[in-house]
Image (cartoon, rainbow, N blue to C red; front, side, top):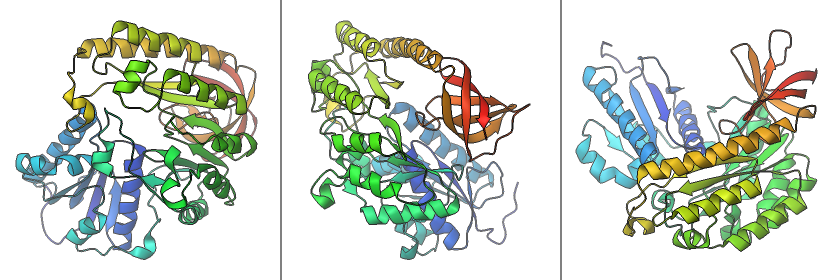
Amino acid sequence: MRTKGKRSEKINVVTLGCSKNIFDSEILMAQLKANDFSVEHESEKEDFDTVIINTCGFIDNAKEESVNTILQFSEAKKQGWVNKVLVTGCLSERYREQLELEIPEVDAWFGTRELPRLLKTLKADYKHELVGERFLTTPVHYAYLKISEGCDRPCAFCAIPLMRGKHKSTPIEELVKQAKSLAAQGTKELILIAQDSTYYGLDIYGKRNLAELMQKLSEVEGIDWIRLHYAYPAGFPMDAIEEMARNPKICNYLDIPLQHINDEMLKGMRRGTTRAKTDRILNEMRTVNPNMAIRTTLITGFPGETEEQFQEMYDWVAKMKFDRLGVFTYSHEENTHAFQLEDDVPQEVKQERANAIMELQESISFEKNKARIGTVERVLIDRKESGYFIGRTQYDSPEVDNEVVIDATDQYVRIGDFVTVKVISNTAFDLEGEVVQA
């Protein structure tokens, strides 16, 4: 057991959930470092004084993971391994009063917009001159850039507005400043994230201004790739796809969560669109930029989903042949519009339907990857692992998409470099390549 004496001033920040939480943790850690704390991210050591847990409250599995993590460190506090446990993020924002009663070992709870109060609790100052500064937890060659916070969409299944508030865009000049700071640290790829990137700029410029933002960021020296995530389909600004098609620094990649395709399901989900509108915008995107990879996510088991409605979605996926795809099973979330509906699809049926979609996508992905054998790709090298260098093409985002593996026994590349690779073989979700030019 660690003996308690003089404060070590060491803080361990643990991040759960999505890339937006990673961004928030990086901002928090930069502030802590500036206040002379020793900070680590997800340290496996047991020599820190305080743990700050940045939680996720999006769906059941994420909430369960967050609660289990809080309980783990609360027990560590009882055992004397940790002196103080602080909790922030989405779960804390949403369930603070309930959690305070159930887990009294936690010293303080903070919402998603209470960074200054969290710092004050640690007797630290919020340094306004550091706004935009980051303590990167990703490999330095890529970084997430949050372009807006919150969401104004009324989706029936989603609790994000409850946890993150209304949509608020970050001005272009501030984002460019952040991009320059990241580039100076060695960042080459910016991954643009938001709760709803489609809405970007509407609140401060009176128009959807995503294309201009992408163009301005591409002018930052040192930034080679800009990747777009989390685009809402309704009202999507097509000039962003036009900018993607003509600007070599914009990756030919779009993450656009579609959730379902049956009209009744879309209406029940309050998505503000229809199958006809969705098909039209996807076809237009592919016409404007035929080289673009489209990633989407879907939900199975929304209240009332029939076998016929699921089958319509399954057949549609088979027809559309998305480059990348993920599936969530519906989670019945308190205080959302859908919570008043009966959660009438059994969990095992939700999961069976999700598995069926993913099996279909595996075959689609295999055929798409097979067609790339013999092509030459520009690959950004992320890491070395088990005798292989692992990288990605412009069509793949870290953590969630395909990877390119390069045998490290007779080839050498540097992590963080772009290399030219010839594809020599494939699996459903990976490509194997050999270096043509390092």
